[in-house]
Length: 360
Image 1 (spheres, one colour):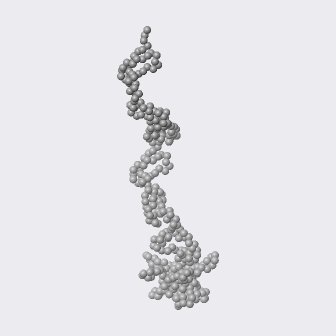
Image 2 (cartoon, helix red, strand yellow):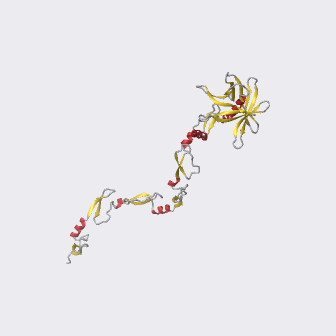
Image 3 (tube, helix red, strand yellow):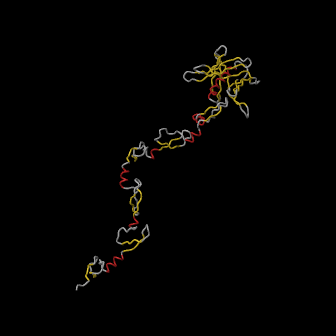
C-alpha cells in the first residue's frame, strides 16, 4: 500500500517538506522560511478609513490606502463627466487628458502692443487683451490736482483727470451779482481762477461785456457835467428786469443821468449803452463796441453824440499802479488826446456793499 506522505521542495531554500495527500493546501515554504516571511509583514492604518493594511517590509512603495479607499471620482472641470482620481497623487488632475488637449488648442499667442512679447489669448474671449497686465496700465498726472492716476493704454478716450476732481470743478450755475440772472461758470474758468488765485466770476458774460460800454458812456458824460460822477448799477422790473446805470453827482448825490443797455441791428446785433439826461429826458450819447490797433487789437468803447452822430470819445481799459495794479477805464476826447477821464470800480458800504464806478 502506497504511503499518503510525499515531499515537495521549499520555494525559498529548497529543503524537502513532507506533505500529506489529504491536505487541501500544499505548503510552499518550510517552517523556518515561513516564519522568516511572516516576520516581514506589519500593519498600518488606512489614511482614509482608518482600517488595518498589511504591509511587507520589502515593498518599495507601501500603500497608504486600501485599494477600495484609494480611488474616488470627481467631475472634470471642462466637460463635467466623472474621472478616477487617486488620493495619494500630489497634484490630482482637474480635467480629463483629452479635455485638456482640446482646451490647449483653443489658446494662441499674439504680441503685446507695448513690449512686443507674447500674450496667451483664448479664442473664445470676446475682448482679447492687447497688452500684458503690467504693460497695459501706466500713470499720468491729473490735469486738475497733479496727482498720479492709473490709465489703460487700450482706452479710446483716456481721462485727463480724476473723477472726484471733475465733480469738484464741474460747471456750476450762479446768479450774477449785477443783474441777478443765472449763468454757468465752466470747468476751464474755475481751473484758471484756481491756478492764478483769482476769485470766481460774479458777473454774467453779458454784464461783464457791458461794463466797458457803461464805463465809456459814463466817462463821456464827465465832459457833459463839470463835477465828479458816481455810478451804481440798478436792476429794475420784476419779471423782465432791466439793467440801469444811475449816474449821480458825487458831491451832492443828485441823480443827473441814466445809462441803459439796448441792442442795434437786425442781422448783426450789437450792444449799445444809451446815456439819458434825467432832467430833460433827452438822449445824450450812444456808446458802441470798437477796436484799437492793427496787429494787437484791443477792445474799446466808442461814444457818439445822440443828435449829430459825431464820434466824441473813446474808452479803453488799462492797468494802473505798481505795487497794487488795478484795471481802470480811461476815456479820451476825440481830437483832445491829452485830457483823459478815469473811471474806476470801487465798493460802497460796509455790510451790504455795492459796486460803484467813480469818474473823476
